[in-house]
Each structure stands twice: as C-alpha cells, then as structure tokens.
Amino acid sequence: MTATDLLSVFSDFAFMRRALAGCLVLSVAAAPVGVFLMLRRLSLTGDAMAHAILPGVAAGYLLAGLNLWAMTAGGLAAGLAIALMASAVTRLTPLKEDASLATLYLISLALGVILISARGSAVDVMHLLFGSVLAIDDTALVFIGIVASITIVAFAILWRPLVLECVDPGFLKAVGGRGAVIHVAFMLVMVLNLIAGFQALGTLLSVGLMMLPAASARFWTRSLGAMTALAMVFAATASVIGLAASFVANLPSGPAIIVAAGILYALSIVFGPTGGLIARFRPARHRTG
Image 1 (tube, rainbow, N blue to C red):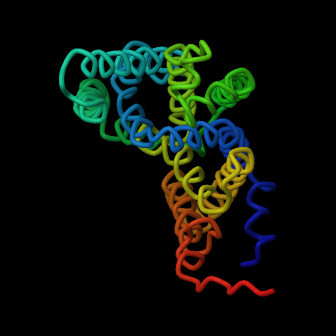
Image 2 (image 1 turned 120 degrees about the vertical axis):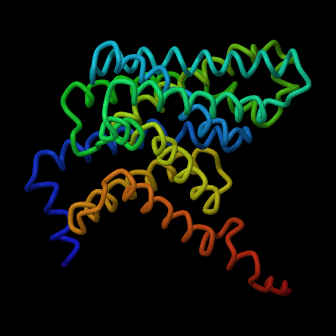
C-alpha cells in the first residue's frame, strides 16, 4: 500500500477527517505546553494531572451522561483541586511536590474508576480512559478549537515570563514578575489541554500527544521557538501516521497515535543532532588551520 493510499482514508471517510482535524488542532495547542513542562522539569506533572481529572470527568458523566460540557467542568474542577491540594501538602508538610502529586493522582485515578463503574459498564470505563478519537463530533471539535485558541492567546501573553521562569526564576522575582500567578495560569492552560485531549485520547493517553513530541524536539534543536514548532510538527505527524495505521491495520486509534509519537521519539534519540546517540558518540572533528 502506497502513502497515497494511506492518505486517501482521510478523503474517503468523514469520521477520519473529523479525527484528523481534532488531532491536528490538539497538536498545535498541546505540544507547546509539553515543551514548557519539560523545560520546567514538570514532565511527570502532566501525567499526574491527566489522571487527576478523571474523578471530575466521572462525576460529570454520572450527572449528565456523555455530555461534553458537564465532563469538562468536572475535569477542570478536579484538576485545579488536585493542583491546589498538592501545593498545600508541599508547603505545609515535608513531602516534596512530586511525592504529593503521585499520591493524589493515584487516589484520583482509583476514585474515578470506581465512580464510572458505579453507573456504567467496562465499555464506559474504556471510553473515558482511552478515548474514542474516531467518534469526535462537532461539539468536541468546537471545544478543542476553543481550547487551542485560548492556549495560543495565553502563550502570546505569557511567553516572555514563562521563558524567564524557566531560565532564571530569581531574576523574574527580582524584576517584579508574578511567578505564582504565571504558574497558576500555565497550570490552568495545561489542565484545559488535558481535558481537550481527553475527548480524543482519553484521560490516560491525552498527555502522550503533549509530552512525546516535546521530548522528541529536544533532540533536534536548542532554540525554544524552533523546539516548539518542531514539537507541533511531530505531534501532527504522529496523528496522521497513527490514524492511517489504525484504519489500515484495524488498531485502536488513540494508542496507535501514541505509538507513532513513540517511534518518532525513538528515532530522535538515535538520530537527533542535539544529544542524540549518534551525535553523542561520533568522534569530534579535528580543527584545521
């Protein structure tokens, strides 16, 4: 089967076009969030928060069924609540933030699964945990587009202080930058993107399209702007390859997208010119002249 045949599945089937549109828009929004999570050494925070939104999503599901806005409101409330509780535990006890997040997200994951199981079947649990990108409807597409728009506007406003906070938080504090406000705004954007990603990839895999392309881009450039753009390209490429492969090989679409992103990550580790294995162990050139 040729590449043209693989791409024809998007022109021949409307549900594939919807899935592709949702994933491409999500790639534009989620990949930059992943880049800043990686630079701030908060990569596991994204994973923890993806699990933490589950009880809220489950509560929305119990109250209103598969209603997008109810599950979104529940997920947003749960994500922010877990973030605040983790921060409070870190400030008031000797426990570090990674440990407090790990404990809270495990409790959240278990509570969410129990809530879903109280009403639905195993199918409902699988739908919420792993998503159903091929079932994206107009409402979900609009929601993903709104989140992407909010994310782009937020980065346009917060880009400089976010960069300063990554590079030199002490300087940001010295010049009067409100690091706490910026951190909360960034966390809010991250939770929104996780909820948007949940529509396509479920709560467990939504962080994959956020972190894997960002980590892959790190092996190709040191420039933040180029890294962000490359992460978007990697996320979009993984979406196209994953969706096409899932259709042809009859694979679950969400996991296929994440596996495609994982293959790009593995290739970046080997061939990336900035810290990749080949570049790292290649003999240095002797200077001439």
